[in-house]
Image (cartoon, rainbow, N blue to C red; front, side, top):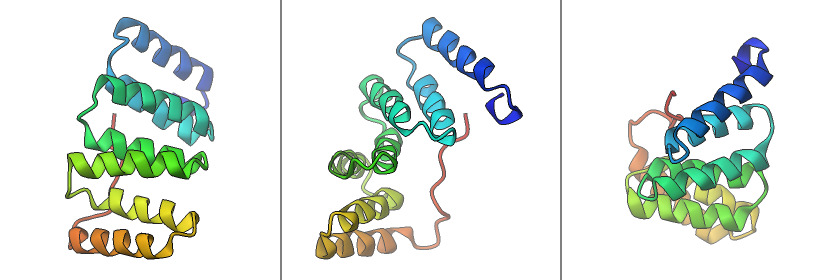
Amino acid sequence: MRDLGREQEAWRVFADAQQRDPRAAAVQRDWAKALARSGRDREAVAKLEEAVRYAPDDAWLWFELGAAYRRAAQEEHAIAALRRATQLDARLHCAFAEWGRALESLGRVEAARRRFAQAARLRGDQPDCRWPAP
């Protein structure tokens, strides 16, 4: 709906879905995705923080939270979230790459290089990471 120019209606649909199932991590994730597309990075972070509270063992959600923290210029929080994502799934190459970018932006070049190398080793022939479709 948001992509069709019906943004206010989209926000109402998300709010209704959240009201029906307040602990649904998928609703929070999808809402965060829409918020991020609208440039509302802080709100996207809040929704993803909520999502990981409901699904704390979901590596992909932690990766998305880390990426959202980066978009909101919260690099230290990004590093913590991305570290958690890789603890949950050590094959998540995109989390290692994003972690490297966060480290690089903080001037921690050697640590960033190690994360990029790890991401490259894990990636192999895998396609780029993409946010799961709702």
